[in-house]
Image 1 (cartoon, rainbow, N blue to C red):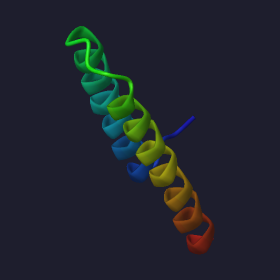
Image 2 (image 1 turned 180 degrees about the horizontal axis):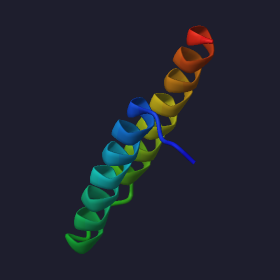
Image 3 (image 1 turned 180 degrees about the vertical axis):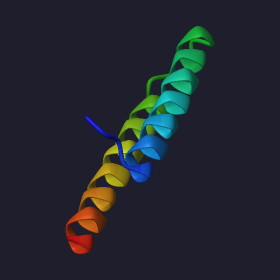
Image 4 (image 1 turned 60 degrees about the vertical axis):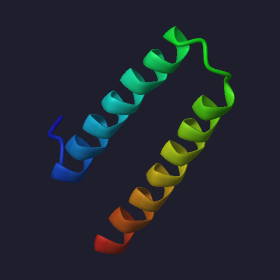
Length: 56
């Protein structure tokens, strides 16, 4: 399965976010920042899907 450039970038961003979330958990920070990160990731995914459908 070939990955497009946008998907590679998205995977890279998700990997970085995953590391940040792990770091926050280690610091025992409240779960709210993690929820905000998840919500922002979902918004990025939705906008990315809309862009992909427009290209087709």
